[in-house]
Length: 91
Image (cartoon, rainbow, N blue to C red):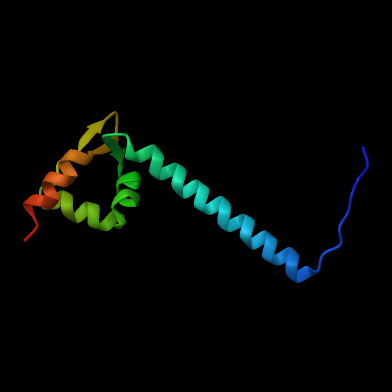
């Protein structure tokens, strides 16, 4: 098979690399969202990503009454419980 080479400028190479990186990052983010969207239970990192909040906020909410499940040392949060907590604390 013949090897076809097309010369392109360094600027264009950089732009293409940036576009590919951005597309990959977006694909990963969408995959994470799909993965956590259909599941009821999430670990703390997934919950932070789902809610767009920090780990510290989750910790503060737990102190305010957000219930979690701890199974074999893993802390899991229910979307139903998170929504209940948010409704209870909304004004």
